[in-house]
Image (cartoon, rainbow, N blue to C red; front, side, top):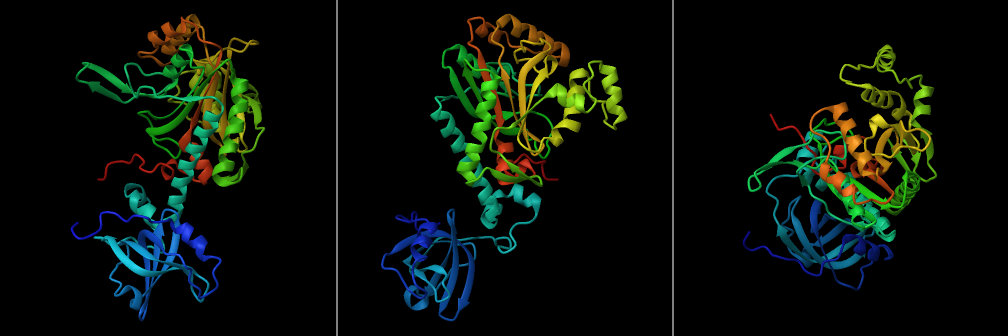
Length: 454
């Protein structure tokens, strides 16, 4: 756009100017000149004095534009402006900037939504997230909470000797979870490829290679349902630690989550899905078998378990086998009750093809999931590090879910020897929901997946 500046150098954040203005006496003006830039979100004309509310990422401040200093104030609601002036405080005690020069930097072409009530239409909030962020301070806060949480996680892991790595998004085989993949094609390689459903198998190859402690904060993709806690594109943290098991990993996650909350929120207490929850450890630990026994649902016979669930009005028509029935029982009767941070551990082998068996019972594996407010945040194992056992588990997986399963290249990697290893996955979107107190995953994903407009 001709005539408008291409840059506005030497600007400071609004929060810094407010801090300078706060100690001033009412009606007083500071000595130092400051330059601010942001969007005009309110305008009030009082004769020769115009009050503008200027907003940037750090906050909001009032601009005092007296015509004898600035000349005519030719700006509209939503314009982006640069303001040069001095920190001041009005006679009513409002921290402000007394403007000497007001510069138009970008002109709005369409009117903003109601800036007082914000953007209330849920569909518009998700489809036009830029407008939502402009007019809803809470949405900007949620975005910052998520970003700061990711930074805190990285710092926490880096400080403990973990190495951040990158693994392929396009994979010739998909694995690491039970899920349907998105399929694409490489013209150059003349082969189908899959968007990864998990980073697990590649990260564990790096443990074989001697990197010992690795993590990846990554996008995963699953061609499945959309719900308040599920999205086809989502962000996961996975880490793997050599010479550790699931008990070590339990201790790490119950230290990491409260540390992140404290850094981001200044407290470990959050309100999530109507519950007041304290994220500080140690967390409650419950064996899966004991939790099901308490509900009268630890039943090894498939038909008997199905009948018991049907008696309790659970529709099991889509559950193909005993493992899916157990998972359905967990989701219906156990997980909703896990409000305070809880580790549910020791799972049947049929539910966990990559976890190592317990020493006491080969039908139970060293796996745990952890929950806050009735929502699962993640999953962890003591990893299988024997290539023959892993090949057998892949065969078991094929029998349970059908289709092409397994990864011979990964089995080959294990045959070169992998140390005892503990691994964990943490859903970043779900953690952001807990920290921000949001009931739906779409509130913490800036651009969530949506159905096409009709």
